[in-house]
Amino acid sequence: MNSTKKTPLIIISIKQNKLDTNCVIEFSDNTNLELSMDLIVKYKFKKGDIVSEDLYNSLVDENNLMLCKQTAYKFASYMPRSKAQIIKKLSENNFSKNQIEQSIDFLERYDLVNDLDYSRKYIQSYLLTKRAGPKKLEQELLLKGIEKNIVNEALKQFYPHDKIPEFIELEINKKKHEVLRKDKNKQYMYITNYLFNKGFYLDNLLKEIVKNKLDELNSSEQ
Image (cartoon, rainbow, N blue to C red; front, side):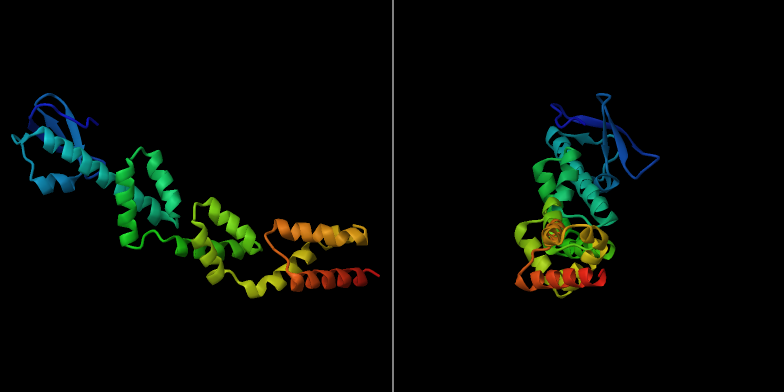
């Protein structure tokens, strides 16, 4: 789509697309410009109207911004998205920085993008299918482009910290056979490394839970 026209143009025809609500304006120099129906109505265009260079450029900018907002809305409403994911999607569609910023402002104004709420949904959804410690979820959210302070607040509010001892015991039970195949003096290191990789940071209380659980497993095998 051309962004500039050096001479005024005369509208020869306005035709609506068959597959959407956009319209194609045909000009006197045999060029075309596709615009949303909203812009056609806004400017009350009709056959024979003269479009100046400034108006033409304004139409291109307005149409691109409208398209950027529509793309952002569709992407954000289809499923939960982070702000960074939406920006990446719009950048891949070659929208300008200014168009992207205005589109994000539009989404935020109507609460269609909210990284704290996105984090809440992500944490809850993740824990429905697998157990993980706060550190693992922190890493996942940061990879989604969520800012560090929002990640911290989300984990504080929405991660079930009171269930960590239960999660740890369940994870040890899951690895029971692997643990018992190890020498006793290597079991603790093995399982703590495993829990660390699952995102659990062990304080003194949790370390004691691990030791007690290992003792229980070994006693059951005797």
